[in-house]
Amino acid sequence: MIDSPYTLKIFQKHTTPNSHRQSDYFSVIKELVGKRNELSADDPEYEAIEHGINQAYALVEDEIINNNDPSIKAVSFGTSGWRGIIGKDLFLKSISQVTQAIVNLYSQLDSDNSLAADLGVQSLKQAQGKGAVVGFDNRFGGKLMADRVVDILTGNGFTVHYAGEATTGTLSAAVLILDAAFSINLTPSHNPLEYGGFKFNAADAGPAAATVTNAITQNARAIIEADQAINLSPDPDLVNRIDALACWQELVAKGVYRHGLNYLDIIKRFAAAQDCVVAIDCVHGASRVHMPSFFNKMNSDHFLLLRENADPTFGGVAPEPSSVNMQQVTDILRARPEKLKLGAIIDPDGDRIRFTDGTNEIDMNMFGAMAYHYLHEVKGKKGLVAKTVATSNFANAIAKKLGEDIFEPRVGFKEFKPVIGRALVCFEESDGITVIGHTPEKDAYIGLIMALDMILTLQKNLGDYVTEVQNEFGYYYPGRGGVEVTQQGNELKATLAGLDKYGPGATVAIGAEIKKISEVITIDGRKMILEDGSWLMIRPSGTEPKVRFYLEARSEAGKDGLMQAAKAMLKEIGLL
Image 1 (cartoon, rainbow, N blue to C red):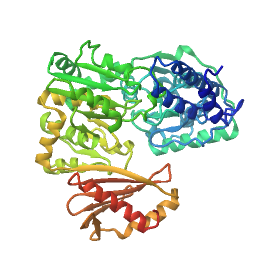
Image 2 (image 1 turned 180 degrees about the horizontal axis):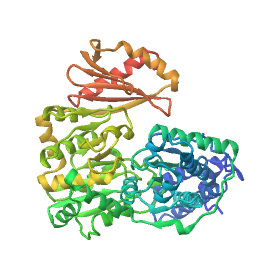
Image 3 (image 1 turned 30 degrees about the vertical axis):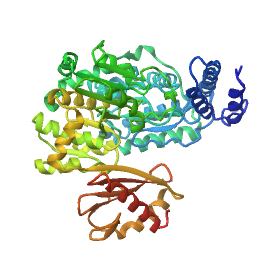
Image 4 (image 1 turned 60 degrees about the vertical axis):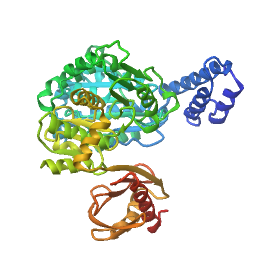
């Protein structure tokens, strides 16, 4: 029974009785969460709104269990797996079909070993024996869907190392420590609350190669088109429950000679440092499960956890590391008396992280460069730096002055595969990082332990450290934006080809100045580097009718001019 006229109105607005497919339960949930956020817990309507949210989720659960229709959007695996709307795209039947598609991938190895190198195993029997690491984040229905994955895998003879709720980084660590064949994580990473996801990593524990994700997509679509019956014969004896964080801790200990990050020592030093405070915002995600143990169950007012309760609505916020979401951590640290302050916000599956010291926000553009400088100059490790083409050139300047190489691929963490094991740091502008001797997957936890080691070793906050490095290697001011357009796919790419006129030697109006393009990089969109080292990159979205801008000025004020230049270019070729 719906408790209030307001709740009833919202349900009537977005749902059709007895029709899951015609009902938009997440619009109900979003509106009710918005209303709940306006009320105090003792308001008479608060309980009714909360009940309405639970009713909507009960309908989502029924849809997850009983939906027999095809997914609204065709299954497609990309760099970060398959994502879609919970109940509409991801539900037990579609999860079963996709898991079977992965089983078939390994079954095909016995007759065609063309994918053996990318999968990291040679036969079905080898994959079954090594097994799969399986986990999920805090999304609604995550355990339901993970349990179905386990049932399909064990029913096909695969050992399953079951982690329960865990982060992507710890699952990847488990693949390496347990020598598993692959991992499956039921997560859409930082997407909004209505999204579910299915992330597949092969035996190297990194994002799967395109050959593999394409094959999964083809297998899944064939199963769905034929409406192939999926055999459910689970074998509980093949399930091995694991502690994914313990696997992560073991991997970091094994890799200490490569990266120099002594995890246990860093935690002990923090516990003894009375002039240091750490505040972690879990945004209700999977990191909340690990953080107490990560910090050795520390009972201290110097260690603070925020948004550490289970909430699949994320309190109504977009669950991503962002300046808006960072504000709570920033405010808390600003009021603290300690000399050393470290704040971080971690996304739901723990593969992205952003930092603050209460005064300065440090995104991955800056932190990745600092991490490289720290490993190279403080830890004494030598090697190249790897960062995606859309990431700040701050790291480039550091590497060049240190006489080291730079690897700069297109956007996507899987693009770092050629330098895993050689690059000291691999990072991307969207808050993902890993280090040498660790997993080839981005991992918030390795970034967190490095940041803590930085401030304890250097006895300075991150903002002071980045200023010190900038004073030596130059100041860089990255930014990003984008616009919606009416074109998508090949049509959009064809229109963007009109920007080819902006080659080396061409001039661009940046604010009141005319600047010359000195270099153009076209591996992922069009990155135009100007004579003063500032740059502007324009690339189409791969999934939406949008054009994204990535830019970097040599002063904070210069970012506006670059943004306006990007929009002027799009207007010139008819997109705006």
